[in-house]
Each structure stands twice: as C-alpha cells, then as structure tokens.
Image (cartoon, rainbow, N blue to C red; front, side):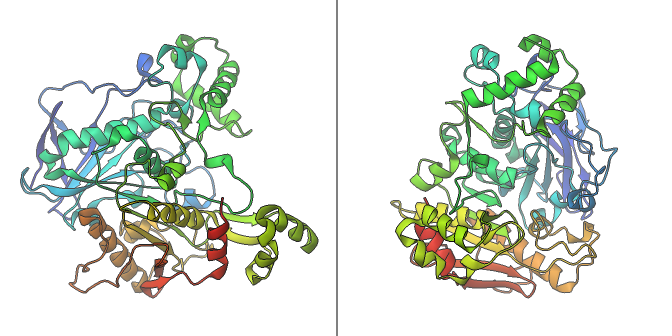
Length: 502
C-alpha cells in the first residue's frame, strides 16, 4: 500500500483507513497559510519541509461559527463537535487511495463541500472517501476560506490586486485542483482523469469552476448536487454573481463595522474578531455569499455560461433532494394568484391556472416547485440545444428519511448516500437505505471513471439504465426507498414551467 508519498513540497505519510487496503492522508498543505499579508490574497505556494510529514489528522477547519452549538438539523446531523480545531491557517486537503504503487493512474474525484460559503469543512463525517476509494477512485477533499475571510471584496483590494481582488474561497478550490493535477499521480491517481464535484455551495463552486475558462483541461467531468437554481416566478438574485461595485460596498461597510480604514489595518486584526463582527452583519443581511464578477476568475453568471455553452463543456451529473428550496407564488388568495399568473406568464396565464399544481397552497404560498430541479433541467436543456451537446444526467433523491424529527427529504441528506457513509449517521437506517446508498455510490463511481453512470454494481448486477436528460428524452433517475428507478418527466406542470422559464 502507498503509505509514504512524495509531493512537490516534501514527503507525506498516511495511515491505513478502516479498510486497511486504503490509505488516508489528512491535512496535506496545498498552499501557504492565508494569514498576515496573505489574508485576502490569491493562494500562495506552500513551503517545503524536510523529512516525512505525518498526515494523520484533519487540519483545522476554516474560521466560521463554532459547530455543534445550535439545535438545528445540521448541528444534529453532522456539525456535532464544538471543540473541533479551527484556524485561519486552513488550506489543506485530504486524500484516500487504494493504490499499491504510483503508476496505477486511477480516476480522481476532487470534492468541494457546501455550507453557503459560511460553514462547512472536509472533516464532516459524511465526506469520508473510503467507500469510493474501495471502488478504485482516488478521493481528494479540499478545504477553502469562508465568510468574510474567503469572500470579502473592497475597493482597496480592487486597486492593489486587480487580477485577484475577491473570490478567495473559489481561488483556494482552484489552487487545490491544480495541486491535484501536479501531485496526484504519486498517489496512484490519473491527473488527466479528474472529476470535480460539490453540493449546495460546493455545487455552486463547481458551476463557478466550470465557468472559469482558465480551468480548461483541469477536469474531465463535473457533479453538481443541489447547486443549480431557477425560478419560474420572481427573478431571484440571491444566487447570481454580484458586481465588483455591489460587493465592494459590502466590504466598505464591514471595514466601518470593524473600525478600520485601510487594508493593512484589516490584515492586522485578529481573525476571530473579524469573524465575530462579520457574523453580526451577516445576521442582519450583509452576507458575503455569492461569487463576484471580477473579470478574471468570474466573468459571467455560471448558470448563463452553462446554458449558452461558454463554460468548460464536460459531461455533468446533477440533481436535487425532494424537499429543498421550494419556490412559490406569494399571493393572499385566488384572485391575487390570477393576477400574479398574468404577470409571470402573460398570454399563457390561463393555461398555467388549468394545472391543479398551480392551485396547491402551502405555508409559503401557491404553486410550489423545486428551484434546483428547474434550474438543473433548464441548464441541461440549454446544453442540449448546442452543437455536439455533452451528456447531462439528472437525478432526484426522494427516499424516505427515518428519525423521530420526521425531517423529510431535506437539503444535503443525499450526501450520506452518495458517499455511502450511512453507518456514521445516528438515524435508524434500514437495509433498503443501505442498498440504495450502494447503488448511488456505484452510479457516482461509474460517472467519475468514465463520464457515464451506467454499468454494474459491486455485486456485478447491472444497474437500471440512466439516460441523459435531453429535450426529446426527459429521462430522470429517481432514488427512492425501493432503490434506483429510471423514469421520464411525468409532470406536465414542470414541462410547462420549463417551456416558459426566462
């Protein structure tokens, strides 16, 4: 087994995973600590070290709210350790490999975690790469800066470092990906067969990396989980990139709140103080959440880039869970619903109102629909209109989720299944859930290897055929409590919305 590996900065030593045929390397530096003068700068090269560096434990997580102190579902689910080490010095990655030698050239997964660019870390239980590594994939999970330390923009940064004035968390991801390209062959991985993947803000990160043409050639395919959004109703700018002007105004308000006037003063502040003051602003709506159109890393809306073909065009797997990010029409009664329908759908408003789904009302409003489902399908249909369209595979996770809290099919729960890490969860999963997780992990592994999820499971059984989602064949893969089930678009309501989406 590969227990000691050469990297560009020195040798690293890993430990046997729970499955001793796999080696895990935790806490490998891929860039210099982003502290002092390196705060709010593009990642700088890591320093060399002498001897063998033991990479046995996860490095400290990025500066963020202390995990595990709340009573929300995510604190119960996986942000469970309030004492987990945390530091501004956080640019480290982790590798799982079952390679026995450095010349095996196995396919590689590079994973970006989610958490609204405010929270999250590679040490989360669900991101254990062992089960994928057992399927002959080299798994890499990359940490990155969050919140104000990762996504600040300010006019002084624009002036002093115009080529990289913001988007530092995304630049960290890019630096991690490029480190993988340069070093992963020594871990038995193939630098020419990399898949980038992420969920939620990590999925949005994958979209941003695909839209950055500087990344051309750095990966062969992409997985976007709950990371594409679209609404047939109000235009939601929550997920759209901000302009430099919009973002820098937020940065100026943060500097005022911190009591500093210059970038140098801000770089001398304690990182925990910056985070605590930023958290107060964030809780009042001043969140550094979206990427910024800086003219370098980000030149346009990644969703637009996907639809019009100005992204890095590789095969994509993407989808969503059943109960997340529901969009509704805000109307007090049926009369106002009719008025809003005319506003949104014009001459097709009467047709919209003939659907029984249009009259459904929940606690939020009328006509509930899944924003990530519509966003993903809209993007795929845009790709399908281009010359030589790339295959795009859509899934919807709708399995039951057990537990006394009756959580529904909540945002992020599919991570337990794709990574096949259900045994780490406290929920009373049953055999059928483990069977589904094995299928989902098999599909994912097949896609990472070849760009096509189809093939066989670990037991040699052929998986249900998963066809690409196209305009002529609206194929879907449904992950249900009874396993994976191939289907086609069943909802005429969704078809109508897709036809009328702007």
